[in-house]
Length: 283
Image (cartoon, rainbow, N blue to C red; front, side, top):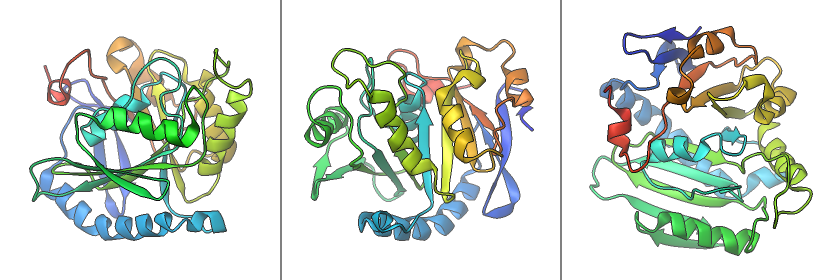
């Protein structure tokens, strides 16, 4: 069950490897020694899984544990991933993520500058932090073509940075119900097929990004995840824009009308040119 702490943040207990629950709090900080211990244990496993994924063994029917990020268009997926990685991702109207974006976050306490690398079409290109959003757009255009079409061919972004969590996630195109000018008429069906490909395997953890400003049962991403995970045992919800709809939010997540088995994490998105540190402050 979700809890509200003294700062008004909503937290939930999530079992991670250790039988002791780790409290995930939207605006709080996790004790660094706990994070360090967790990273030491999980990093070798993630590296092994990433090497296997790089060999494309999933195309042979061998499934790998994967955190799959899904959400309706404009739900705030990019903001959540930006906050985790501490970098800027492409933003704008319409579908910003047009190909599956595999984000490999690797914590390296020995470096001072962020090390970024894009991998696609048998290429590996170093990218600087300022130009990462533009580089992703160019790589996406090369994979999916110019325009507003999508592709199921993945693009990998490796982020080596001091302080990021050791995680690998796959960000999928946002769900849109109606094709806009320049999009194929069957854009919904194309996005649906890509999402289902990634969330059907039981090895996948579904990170469902929901906007606090909408009714959760109306979200298309909820409908899709419930098709493959009726009990919600492998679905975690991240509720964005919590500051825009604070009234009744606690009741909304504790009621759990959409059966989110792994609980909810509520976050506030950055506003304008606000830094990540400012967004995380308790002010």
